[in-house]
Image (cartoon, rainbow, N blue to C red):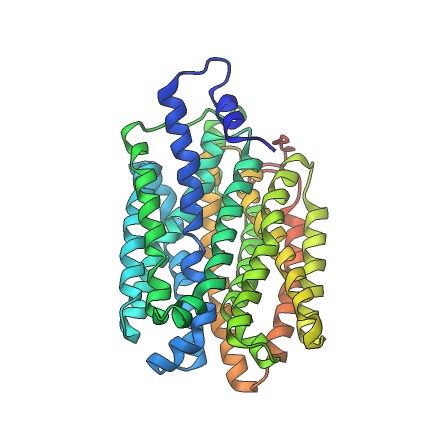
Length: 419
């Protein structure tokens, strides 16, 4: 594992260009960590609060599921356009604008009322989309030789704050008397801190890193016509659907099995915490392997065991299955983030593949929470929804075997190993 200082020294190469560049890169590393922290906390904080929100604004379970679905729809609609925005106006500048809109979205969502709830959620969804798409490209551009390590750092920050958010939502809303509005609005502080760290990067914009195996021809690869790109996209979509279904409904599933509201929120936190070591380790491992198919198989087995455990196990073993699900989610997320860089030959291609995968992928993921809510309303049981997750886990393994091939999009040539 590389320390931040080692990353900086490797990035500068033979001639360390001085304090200014070192400071800029430190701000970039810290900025990436803080931005990643914003990508899940505003979403995972919703799950434990669903029943409070539902009762307060008088909506059905299906509409409550849409609170999680709306950002996913935003991801799907905006993702294809984000690479062009980043290319035209600069990645750093577009990310800063997105952070400002993230603060606005969190503030609007925290106002009382169903309309502002969904409008604010849509705004923050669009803001998160931009960072979702551009951060993998930025990492490939600035840290091409440490992509696995930086992707791991980015993944851990995202999942750690997501875990904290889900765990403290009920204590903030009920214990601290902030209600659901305050428990959701508090995450605007994290966004403001991210803005403060990101502003210095606009004064000293970095130059795109030169990647030895990229060529003009490779930049013209038609990503949308690549079977490999579609396999990466489906892997991204299915793993996202599984994760956001768990974020939206795991507390409710557990409450029906005898876990109280406060504990169910912490169970979701445990799930995300269990994913943290593997969200870091898996990208590093994946970058050093000739292909990632064995990691895909492990991912599938973990998700199947965890989901079947929730479906058929007693209350005494629920924590075990939640932990196994968390480990599987860590594997799946780490792989999906690494595929954007491993299956492409340049930062530009990585942005395009990221945009495609997050557009179609999140469109598929958007169906998940609302569909699960509808099935529960229709059957008054969590059995059918959990069986859907079992099927999704199996399908994830099938497309993952294709996405894990040792190839680049638009090319049958073997890829280079990335440490």
